[in-house]
Image 1 (cartoon, rainbow, N blue to C red):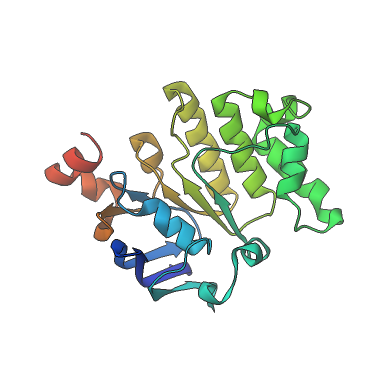
Image 2 (tube, rainbow, N blue to C red):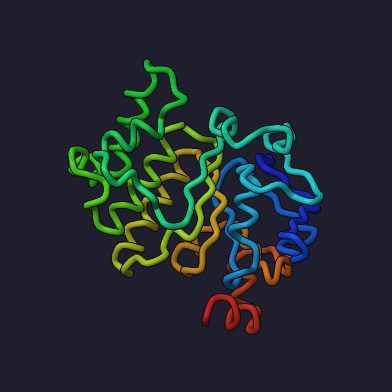
Length: 235
């Protein structure tokens, strides 16, 4: 297994509170790695550390052989890291097309058209809605727009924070299909999520609890452990 992202001993404090303690995590070059755990477990904090929105107190983050801690958040897109945060957050007064073009701001003009074509093929609903104002889309369509906008930089690594939050089951099924296609395109995904249908896509699942990593293994291994399956998957 080739490693794309390696997190070692990451510790994060918010003033005196310990948010993450000595977290280790590996993201391979292909596939989906999931993080699960209750609210406040540290999943969002870890994604923010990776995308350089939060500085760790200790530890290292190596991406394609480079230490991310020496870079600022504005440099990560050029390195191939896209962050799709919780809450979708479209530019509400802009059209779908303009939202997508804004996402591809780092690309040379000659490549933007090709990447836009790939994104619209991946999300046909965005092609149908490309002249519509982003703020008028449904919740599911806004999530597709958020994913599409993140993919406009042609990333190697996509960070996803709770993509199913607030979506209807039917929309989550569609989202599952889209995330599967993103993986098939060769983009590695690190996802914080609670929905079992999306977690099933993961090659490795990491369980966080109170800022600590308490398990790392496959979905099957979690399901075979009655306590883990009941506590973290609601089964």
